[in-house]
Length: 390
Image 1 (tube, rainbow, N blue to C red):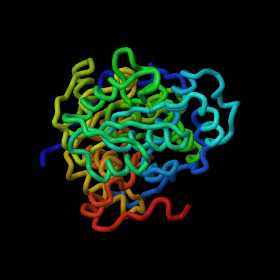
Image 2 (tube, rainbow, N blue to C red):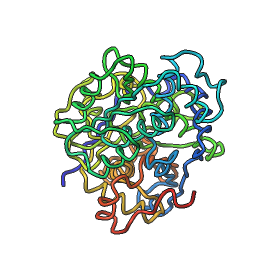
Image 3 (cartoon, rainbow, N blue to C red):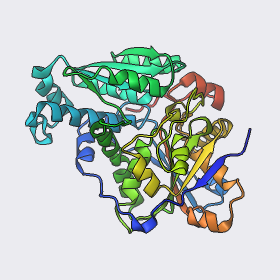
Protein backbone atom coordinates (compact mmCIF):
# COMPACT_ATOMS: atom_id res chain seq x y z
CA UNK A 1 0.00 0.00 0.00
CA UNK A 2 1.40 3.41 -0.95
CA UNK A 3 1.21 6.65 1.00
CA UNK A 4 -1.76 9.00 0.63
CA UNK A 5 -1.68 11.86 -1.84
CA UNK A 6 -2.08 15.13 0.07
CA UNK A 7 -2.79 18.40 -1.72
CA UNK A 8 -3.02 21.63 0.26
CA UNK A 9 -5.22 23.95 -1.73
CA UNK A 10 -3.53 27.32 -2.20
CA UNK A 11 -6.58 28.47 -4.19
CA UNK A 12 -8.90 28.26 -1.16
CA UNK A 13 -10.17 31.75 -0.46
CA UNK A 14 -10.27 31.59 3.33
CA UNK A 15 -12.38 34.34 4.84
CA UNK A 16 -12.30 36.29 1.58
CA UNK A 17 -15.03 34.06 0.15
CA UNK A 18 -18.66 34.11 1.19
CA UNK A 19 -21.32 31.67 0.01
CA UNK A 20 -25.02 32.47 0.17
CA UNK A 21 -26.68 30.22 2.77
CA UNK A 22 -28.83 27.34 1.59
CA UNK A 23 -32.58 28.01 1.58
CA UNK A 24 -34.72 26.73 4.43
CA UNK A 25 -37.18 24.91 2.16
CA UNK A 26 -35.25 21.58 1.83
CA UNK A 27 -35.33 21.12 5.61
CA UNK A 28 -39.05 21.88 5.68
CA UNK A 29 -39.60 19.48 2.78
CA UNK A 30 -37.69 16.59 4.36
CA UNK A 31 -39.59 16.87 7.62
CA UNK A 32 -42.79 16.00 5.72
CA UNK A 33 -41.61 12.40 5.24
CA UNK A 34 -43.01 10.02 7.82
CA UNK A 35 -39.53 8.50 8.13
CA UNK A 36 -37.82 11.80 8.91
CA UNK A 37 -35.68 12.11 11.99
CA UNK A 38 -32.29 13.81 12.43
CA UNK A 39 -29.39 11.44 11.86
CA UNK A 40 -27.19 10.88 14.95
CA UNK A 41 -24.14 12.94 15.79
CA UNK A 42 -21.93 10.38 17.54
CA UNK A 43 -19.07 11.30 19.86
CA UNK A 44 -16.08 8.97 19.42
CA UNK A 45 -13.47 9.71 22.10
CA UNK A 46 -11.40 6.63 21.36
CA UNK A 47 -11.06 7.58 17.72
CA UNK A 48 -10.26 11.18 18.68
CA UNK A 49 -7.39 9.99 20.86
CA UNK A 50 -6.03 7.95 17.96
CA UNK A 51 -6.04 11.05 15.77
CA UNK A 52 -4.45 13.26 18.40
CA UNK A 53 -7.39 15.70 18.45
CA UNK A 54 -9.68 16.93 21.17
CA UNK A 55 -13.07 15.63 19.97
CA UNK A 56 -14.27 13.59 17.02
CA UNK A 57 -17.93 13.80 16.05
CA UNK A 58 -19.36 11.43 13.43
CA UNK A 59 -22.49 12.42 11.51
CA UNK A 60 -23.98 8.96 11.01
CA UNK A 61 -25.93 8.77 7.72
CA UNK A 62 -26.47 4.99 7.86
CA UNK A 63 -30.25 5.45 7.95
CA UNK A 64 -31.84 8.41 6.22
CA UNK A 65 -35.52 8.64 5.21
CA UNK A 66 -35.71 4.84 5.11
CA UNK A 67 -32.52 4.24 3.08
CA UNK A 68 -28.94 3.47 4.17
CA UNK A 69 -27.36 6.65 2.80
CA UNK A 70 -27.58 10.45 2.87
CA UNK A 71 -28.44 10.45 -0.84
CA UNK A 72 -32.21 10.50 -0.28
CA UNK A 73 -31.90 14.09 0.93
CA UNK A 74 -30.55 15.38 -2.39
CA UNK A 75 -32.45 13.00 -4.66
CA UNK A 76 -35.86 13.70 -3.13
CA UNK A 77 -35.49 17.49 -3.02
CA UNK A 78 -34.05 17.67 -6.54
CA UNK A 79 -36.78 15.40 -7.93
CA UNK A 80 -39.48 17.44 -6.24
CA UNK A 81 -38.08 20.79 -7.43
CA UNK A 82 -37.60 19.48 -10.96
CA UNK A 83 -41.18 18.21 -11.04
CA UNK A 84 -42.46 21.53 -9.68
CA UNK A 85 -40.50 23.42 -12.34
CA UNK A 86 -42.02 21.21 -15.02
CA UNK A 87 -45.68 21.26 -13.99
CA UNK A 88 -45.96 24.67 -12.32
CA UNK A 89 -47.11 26.09 -9.01
CA UNK A 90 -49.61 23.33 -8.22
CA UNK A 91 -46.83 21.44 -6.39
CA UNK A 92 -45.71 24.35 -4.19
CA UNK A 93 -44.89 23.48 -0.59
CA UNK A 94 -47.98 25.38 0.53
CA UNK A 95 -50.24 23.09 -1.52
CA UNK A 96 -49.55 19.85 0.39
CA UNK A 97 -48.40 18.57 3.77
CA UNK A 98 -47.67 14.86 3.31
CA UNK A 99 -45.99 12.86 0.55
CA UNK A 100 -49.27 11.04 -0.19
CA UNK A 101 -50.84 14.41 -0.99
CA UNK A 102 -47.95 15.23 -3.32
CA UNK A 103 -48.51 11.91 -5.10
CA UNK A 104 -52.17 12.79 -5.67
CA UNK A 105 -51.22 16.19 -7.08
CA UNK A 106 -48.97 14.43 -9.61
CA UNK A 107 -51.69 12.10 -10.92
CA UNK A 108 -52.74 14.35 -13.86
CA UNK A 109 -49.16 14.48 -15.15
CA UNK A 110 -48.47 10.74 -15.40
CA UNK A 111 -46.88 8.83 -17.00
CA UNK A 112 -43.59 10.33 -15.89
CA UNK A 113 -40.26 8.54 -15.38
CA UNK A 114 -37.37 9.72 -13.25
CA UNK A 115 -33.99 8.78 -14.74
CA UNK A 116 -30.60 8.65 -13.01
CA UNK A 117 -27.10 7.25 -13.26
CA UNK A 118 -25.52 5.88 -10.11
CA UNK A 119 -22.95 3.72 -8.39
CA UNK A 120 -25.81 2.64 -6.12
CA UNK A 121 -27.06 5.10 -3.51
CA UNK A 122 -28.25 8.06 -5.61
CA UNK A 123 -30.09 5.82 -8.05
CA UNK A 124 -31.84 3.90 -5.31
CA UNK A 125 -32.88 7.18 -3.70
CA UNK A 126 -34.34 8.50 -6.97
CA UNK A 127 -36.16 5.19 -7.41
CA UNK A 128 -37.53 5.32 -3.84
CA UNK A 129 -38.85 8.85 -4.30
CA UNK A 130 -40.42 7.92 -7.64
CA UNK A 131 -42.23 5.00 -5.99
CA UNK A 132 -43.46 7.21 -3.14
CA UNK A 133 -45.11 9.67 -5.55
CA UNK A 134 -46.38 7.10 -8.05
CA UNK A 135 -43.85 7.59 -10.85
CA UNK A 136 -41.63 5.19 -12.78
CA UNK A 137 -37.83 5.13 -12.48
CA UNK A 138 -35.08 4.07 -14.89
CA UNK A 139 -31.61 3.75 -13.37
CA UNK A 140 -28.26 3.19 -15.11
CA UNK A 141 -25.21 1.72 -13.34
CA UNK A 142 -21.63 1.11 -14.52
CA UNK A 143 -20.35 -2.38 -15.14
CA UNK A 144 -18.96 -3.90 -11.95
CA UNK A 145 -21.65 -2.46 -9.67
CA UNK A 146 -22.17 -4.83 -6.73
CA UNK A 147 -25.17 -7.15 -7.24
CA UNK A 148 -26.54 -6.12 -3.83
CA UNK A 149 -26.76 -2.51 -5.00
CA UNK A 150 -28.50 -3.48 -8.24
CA UNK A 151 -30.96 -5.64 -6.31
CA UNK A 152 -31.64 -2.75 -3.92
CA UNK A 153 -32.47 -0.44 -6.83
CA UNK A 154 -34.77 -3.02 -8.40
CA UNK A 155 -36.45 -3.57 -5.02
CA UNK A 156 -37.78 -0.02 -5.31
CA UNK A 157 -39.67 -0.99 -8.48
CA UNK A 158 -37.19 0.66 -10.87
CA UNK A 159 -35.58 -0.74 -13.97
CA UNK A 160 -31.79 -1.02 -13.64
CA UNK A 161 -29.58 -1.22 -16.71
CA UNK A 162 -25.85 -1.98 -16.62
CA UNK A 163 -23.73 0.25 -18.88
CA UNK A 164 -20.42 -1.01 -20.21
CA UNK A 165 -17.87 1.45 -18.88
CA UNK A 166 -17.52 3.78 -15.92
CA UNK A 167 -19.90 5.86 -13.84
CA UNK A 168 -19.28 8.72 -16.28
CA UNK A 169 -20.43 6.46 -19.13
CA UNK A 170 -23.59 5.68 -17.16
CA UNK A 171 -24.19 9.42 -16.73
CA UNK A 172 -23.85 9.95 -20.48
CA UNK A 173 -26.29 7.11 -21.16
CA UNK A 174 -28.88 8.46 -18.73
CA UNK A 175 -28.75 11.89 -20.34
CA UNK A 176 -29.94 10.38 -23.62
CA UNK A 177 -33.32 9.57 -22.05
CA UNK A 178 -34.25 13.20 -21.39
CA UNK A 179 -37.67 14.02 -22.83
CA UNK A 180 -41.03 15.46 -21.85
CA UNK A 181 -41.91 12.19 -20.11
CA UNK A 182 -38.44 11.31 -18.85
CA UNK A 183 -36.91 13.65 -16.26
CA UNK A 184 -33.18 13.16 -15.64
CA UNK A 185 -32.28 13.67 -11.97
CA UNK A 186 -28.48 13.66 -11.83
CA UNK A 187 -26.25 14.60 -8.91
CA UNK A 188 -23.52 15.69 -11.30
CA UNK A 189 -23.66 18.44 -13.90
CA UNK A 190 -22.37 19.17 -17.37
CA UNK A 191 -22.65 22.09 -19.82
CA UNK A 192 -26.32 22.98 -20.19
CA UNK A 193 -27.42 20.79 -17.27
CA UNK A 194 -26.86 22.51 -13.93
CA UNK A 195 -30.23 23.36 -12.36
CA UNK A 196 -31.16 19.92 -11.03
CA UNK A 197 -27.67 19.13 -9.68
CA UNK A 198 -27.90 22.49 -7.91
CA UNK A 199 -31.07 21.29 -6.23
CA UNK A 200 -29.23 18.13 -5.13
CA UNK A 201 -26.61 20.29 -3.40
CA UNK A 202 -29.40 22.27 -1.71
CA UNK A 203 -31.03 19.05 -0.52
CA UNK A 204 -27.96 18.00 1.43
CA UNK A 205 -28.16 21.20 3.49
CA UNK A 206 -30.55 19.43 5.88
CA UNK A 207 -27.52 17.55 7.26
CA UNK A 208 -25.84 20.76 8.35
CA UNK A 209 -28.97 22.36 9.77
CA UNK A 210 -29.21 19.30 11.98
CA UNK A 211 -25.53 19.53 12.95
CA UNK A 212 -25.99 23.15 13.97
CA UNK A 213 -28.89 22.17 16.24
CA UNK A 214 -26.99 19.18 17.64
CA UNK A 215 -23.88 21.23 18.43
CA UNK A 216 -25.88 23.81 20.36
CA UNK A 217 -23.63 26.66 19.29
CA UNK A 218 -20.29 24.84 19.65
CA UNK A 219 -17.81 25.71 16.93
CA UNK A 220 -16.16 23.13 14.71
CA UNK A 221 -12.47 23.35 13.84
CA UNK A 222 -12.55 20.96 10.87
CA UNK A 223 -15.03 19.09 8.67
CA UNK A 224 -13.94 15.99 6.74
CA UNK A 225 -16.13 14.94 3.80
CA UNK A 226 -15.93 12.20 1.13
CA UNK A 227 -15.88 13.47 -2.46
CA UNK A 228 -17.27 11.81 -5.57
CA UNK A 229 -18.44 14.35 -8.16
CA UNK A 230 -18.47 16.97 -5.39
CA UNK A 231 -22.15 17.60 -4.59
CA UNK A 232 -21.96 16.76 -0.88
CA UNK A 233 -18.66 18.61 -0.54
CA UNK A 234 -20.19 21.67 -2.22
CA UNK A 235 -23.00 21.53 0.33
CA UNK A 236 -20.37 21.49 3.11
CA UNK A 237 -18.70 24.56 1.60
CA UNK A 238 -22.02 26.37 1.33
CA UNK A 239 -22.87 25.53 4.94
CA UNK A 240 -19.57 26.64 6.44
CA UNK A 241 -18.61 29.49 4.14
CA UNK A 242 -21.90 31.38 4.50
CA UNK A 243 -21.35 32.55 8.08
CA UNK A 244 -17.98 33.97 9.21
CA UNK A 245 -18.78 32.93 12.78
CA UNK A 246 -18.58 29.27 11.70
CA UNK A 247 -15.41 28.84 9.69
CA UNK A 248 -13.83 25.40 10.09
CA UNK A 249 -11.19 23.99 7.81
CA UNK A 250 -12.70 21.65 5.20
CA UNK A 251 -10.89 18.48 4.09
CA UNK A 252 -12.02 16.37 1.14
CA UNK A 253 -11.24 12.66 0.72
CA UNK A 254 -11.17 10.69 -2.57
CA UNK A 255 -9.91 7.32 -3.82
CA UNK A 256 -6.49 7.50 -5.41
CA UNK A 257 -7.80 5.87 -8.57
CA UNK A 258 -10.62 8.43 -8.95
CA UNK A 259 -9.26 11.62 -7.41
CA UNK A 260 -10.93 13.79 -10.02
CA UNK A 261 -11.45 16.84 -7.80
CA UNK A 262 -7.92 16.82 -6.39
CA UNK A 263 -6.45 16.56 -9.89
CA UNK A 264 -8.81 19.22 -11.23
CA UNK A 265 -7.96 21.69 -8.47
CA UNK A 266 -4.28 20.96 -9.05
CA UNK A 267 -4.78 21.63 -12.77
CA UNK A 268 -6.88 24.73 -12.22
CA UNK A 269 -9.81 23.40 -14.27
CA UNK A 270 -12.02 20.29 -14.39
CA UNK A 271 -10.16 17.31 -15.84
CA UNK A 272 -11.10 13.71 -16.53
CA UNK A 273 -9.41 10.97 -14.53
CA UNK A 274 -9.97 8.00 -16.84
CA UNK A 275 -11.21 4.68 -15.57
CA UNK A 276 -11.47 1.96 -14.75
CA UNK A 277 -12.29 3.21 -11.24
CA UNK A 278 -12.25 0.12 -9.06
CA UNK A 279 -11.96 1.36 -5.51
CA UNK A 280 -14.18 -0.30 -2.92
CA UNK A 281 -15.38 3.27 -2.24
CA UNK A 282 -17.98 2.74 -4.96
CA UNK A 283 -19.84 6.01 -4.43
CA UNK A 284 -16.62 7.95 -5.01
CA UNK A 285 -15.61 6.21 -8.24
CA UNK A 286 -16.12 9.27 -10.44
CA UNK A 287 -13.90 10.48 -13.25
CA UNK A 288 -14.94 14.13 -13.58
CA UNK A 289 -16.14 16.75 -11.07
CA UNK A 290 -19.59 18.26 -11.28
CA UNK A 291 -19.37 21.48 -13.27
CA UNK A 292 -21.61 23.40 -10.87
CA UNK A 293 -19.82 22.13 -7.75
CA UNK A 294 -16.24 22.64 -8.91
CA UNK A 295 -15.90 26.42 -8.36
CA UNK A 296 -17.19 26.04 -4.81
CA UNK A 297 -14.73 23.23 -4.11
CA UNK A 298 -11.79 25.27 -5.41
CA UNK A 299 -12.77 28.25 -3.27
CA UNK A 300 -13.78 26.42 -0.12
CA UNK A 301 -11.85 23.19 0.48
CA UNK A 302 -8.52 23.62 2.27
CA UNK A 303 -6.98 20.20 1.65
CA UNK A 304 -7.55 17.06 -0.38
CA UNK A 305 -6.47 13.55 0.59
CA UNK A 306 -6.48 10.66 -1.90
CA UNK A 307 -6.27 7.24 -0.31
CA UNK A 308 -6.06 3.52 -1.04
CA UNK A 309 -8.70 1.00 -0.02
CA UNK A 310 -7.00 -0.62 2.98
CA UNK A 311 -7.30 2.46 5.24
CA UNK A 312 -11.04 2.42 4.49
CA UNK A 313 -11.35 -1.17 5.69
CA UNK A 314 -9.57 -0.17 8.90
CA UNK A 315 -11.88 2.84 9.31
CA UNK A 316 -14.98 0.67 8.88
CA UNK A 317 -13.81 -1.57 11.71
CA UNK A 318 -12.96 1.41 13.93
CA UNK A 319 -16.32 3.04 13.34
CA UNK A 320 -18.02 -0.22 14.28
CA UNK A 321 -16.27 -0.06 17.68
CA UNK A 322 -17.81 3.41 18.11
CA UNK A 323 -21.27 2.07 17.30
CA UNK A 324 -21.42 3.47 13.75
CA UNK A 325 -22.26 1.16 10.84
CA UNK A 326 -20.36 2.60 7.89
CA UNK A 327 -19.94 1.17 4.41
CA UNK A 328 -16.92 1.51 2.19
CA UNK A 329 -17.85 4.96 0.90
CA UNK A 330 -19.12 6.07 4.30
CA UNK A 331 -15.85 5.32 6.07
CA UNK A 332 -13.73 7.25 3.56
CA UNK A 333 -13.76 10.50 5.54
CA UNK A 334 -12.42 8.91 8.72
CA UNK A 335 -9.86 6.96 6.70
CA UNK A 336 -8.66 10.15 5.05
CA UNK A 337 -8.42 11.98 8.38
CA UNK A 338 -6.35 9.12 9.85
CA UNK A 339 -4.05 9.03 6.83
CA UNK A 340 -3.58 12.80 6.97
CA UNK A 341 -2.79 12.80 10.70
CA UNK A 342 -0.32 9.93 10.28
CA UNK A 343 1.39 11.46 7.26
CA UNK A 344 3.94 13.54 9.13
CA UNK A 345 2.54 16.96 8.25
CA UNK A 346 3.85 19.65 10.57
CA UNK A 347 2.15 21.15 13.60
CA UNK A 348 1.50 24.40 11.73
CA UNK A 349 -0.27 22.54 8.92
CA UNK A 350 -2.25 20.43 11.38
CA UNK A 351 -3.32 23.59 13.16
CA UNK A 352 -4.34 25.28 9.91
CA UNK A 353 -6.42 22.21 9.03
CA UNK A 354 -8.14 22.15 12.43
CA UNK A 355 -6.44 18.94 13.55
CA UNK A 356 -4.74 20.16 16.73
CA UNK A 357 -4.86 18.56 20.20
CA UNK A 358 -7.81 20.75 21.28
CA UNK A 359 -9.71 20.61 17.96
CA UNK A 360 -13.30 19.49 17.43
CA UNK A 361 -13.58 17.62 14.12
CA UNK A 362 -16.73 16.55 12.28
CA UNK A 363 -16.44 13.46 10.07
CA UNK A 364 -19.32 12.66 7.72
CA UNK A 365 -20.06 8.93 7.46
CA UNK A 366 -22.18 9.10 4.36
CA UNK A 367 -23.63 5.58 4.16
CA UNK A 368 -24.34 2.42 6.09
CA UNK A 369 -23.81 -1.15 4.95
CA UNK A 370 -25.11 -0.78 1.39
CA UNK A 371 -23.42 -4.07 0.49
CA UNK A 372 -24.03 -6.29 3.56
CA UNK A 373 -21.82 -9.13 2.29
CA UNK A 374 -18.87 -6.77 1.82
CA UNK A 375 -19.48 -5.23 5.24
CA UNK A 376 -19.54 -8.69 6.83
CA UNK A 377 -16.29 -9.67 5.11
CA UNK A 378 -14.49 -6.49 6.19
CA UNK A 379 -15.85 -5.87 9.68
CA UNK A 380 -16.39 -9.50 10.67
CA UNK A 381 -19.99 -9.13 11.77
CA UNK A 382 -23.41 -8.68 10.24
CA UNK A 383 -24.69 -5.12 10.05
CA UNK A 384 -27.79 -4.44 12.11
CA UNK A 385 -31.06 -3.76 10.35
CA UNK A 386 -31.22 0.07 10.24
CA UNK A 387 -35.03 -0.06 10.29
CA UNK A 388 -35.36 -2.55 13.16
CA UNK A 389 -36.15 0.13 15.73
CA UNK A 390 -38.71 1.97 13.68
